[in-house]
Amino acid sequence: QVQVVESGGGLVQAGGSLRLSCTASGTIKDIDAMGWHRQAPGLQRELVASIQKGGITYVANSMKGRFTISAISRDNAMNTAYLQMSSLTPEDTAVYYCYSEAYGLYYTGKGTPVTVSS
Image (cartoon, rainbow, N blue to C red):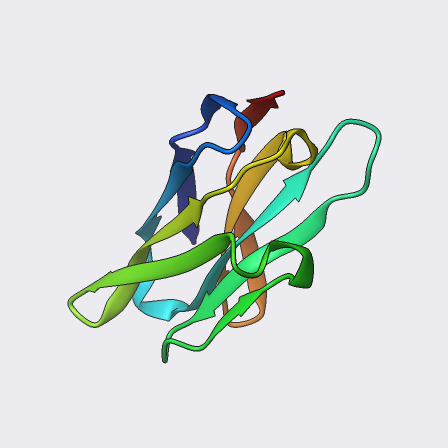
């Protein structure tokens, strides 16, 4: 079992930056990837970014150049992921959810809200 907790959300003005953090606990040695989804009001949840244990990253096209994902490991186990967001626009307003993937199972946090004011 893996538990994930997000932090770092809040209110930011358009053009600003924010860094989200995600900490995983439990059987972290089994984690193969971590990432972020987001869900804006009235819209479907979408994948924002992901990072694999070997360091391969993915960022959704609409966020490339503005969002960066990174991760750190403890004892060769990935346990913390960051989502650095810059040049934020009101369209980035959403609840951001972190997930960890282990053996094909996904563990998602409760989310952290991000509000970008114009």
